Amino acid sequence: MYIPAVLAIIAAGINLTRRVWVVNAAALGLQYLAVFVLLLTVRPVSLAVVKLLVGWMVTLTLFLSLITDGKIRGAKAFFSFSAGEIFRLLAGLFAVLFMTVLLPELQAEVFPRSSLPLLLAAFSLLVLGLFQASLIAEPFYVIIGLLTFLSGVELLYASLELSTLLEALFAGVNLGLALVGTFFVIKDAEIPEA
Image (cartoon, rainbow, N blue to C red):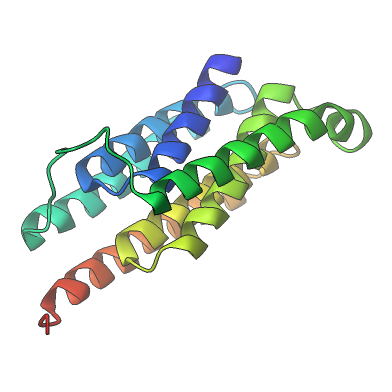
């Protein structure tokens, strides 16, 4: 089960590092797919599918707000990195490596029933989401960071307990964040540039 965990971490790392909106929307969709596969190990298929559908609806909502806004940027110069992107990449790599070193002991002491790949993905998504929400001011990227953080919380909670009501609350919060993000993306575009 390390493959979906690594895919979720890579998708969150792309969203943390890159600032190409089309790529970020695709990475967010991939992240939700990887979280879905991880959730299948601890949740019934019906609840895991809800997470996948909500995640893809969130991704589509944000993507469509960018299209209607006319702010979609192409994937030009994808392999050239700015100094800020290199900093965010190194910070994310350091955080994930730190998690990888600490998690086996944390799992043994605190989360003995949770699988190591699920914990690695959960804590990595938590940290990478916090990094993203705090290191950029554009609403689209802040919302992606908050959604990534929330995915980490959902994975961590799913490894501990099953609560259908809380799963519904998580779905509502995800959709609410997408609507708030859409509002701020459109509002940000309406502000005339000086």
